Image (cartoon, rainbow, N blue to C red; front, side, top):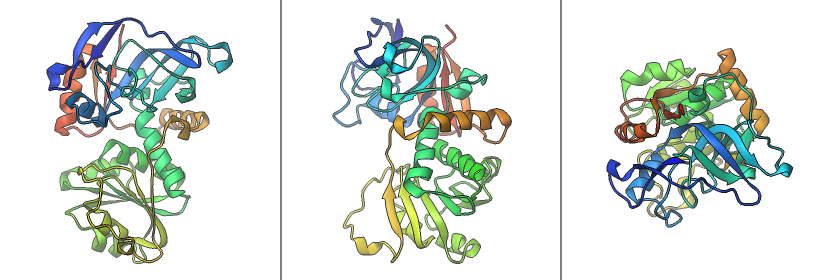
Length: 326
């Protein structure tokens, strides 16, 4: 089969399209014929050699994919030709991932679905929706009628979280560093776009004097203290990402957390996104209730370099998806 292989860390030229052996699924694993996959910042990190020691080389990157079952154990409940999604769980890191015509993954991280949506739309969803849904459901326990602040709203996870939260019935505030991108937030269903200059507490408290019920932190520890101050007493902050690059707090003390405000985190796996919930999301997209922030679709493995280059520049908002036409 054809695949993109990173033999050693490097620049975009480290992404080499080559012919490799077809993966043979071990017991309890499923082989998937890949139809589309999203390109993510973590894969750029893997290509550069900046991932944790879990990643070894040579490696086929790719932490998510959609496609059809090619081979599966009879007791897996999966059948050849069935539409499936997969993500995370060491995929593209400790074992070969989705930048290929076929990928083999543990059956436990395979989500079956049925949809008539184009593969490039389905391919944008797995990691993005799993992270957004897990953050809202497990991290925050968000409920209809509550208020949600998304710090880092124009990221793919931020935009997805906004659409899911609005479909749930929440009031959504979300941030962008650029006033020109406020329209993107409104298009995703955000009720109150906010321009983030590093401190947004006053803006949030002007809209919600008691503070928001929940805050999804995607920017990172550089703004976490300010995010704390936007949340009401007995509200919750969920730390999910660090788009600004700061994952830790120097000289952290628990007393920096305002009294009564809860702090949690989310870094889940495919199993956190139930198949029925993924199916509901696909149906909501087909019905027009949820919007998928697709930035660009690339055709064929030869376009992976271009996709990673666009992800690195960050100039085009939304998900970058590679579609395999063969």
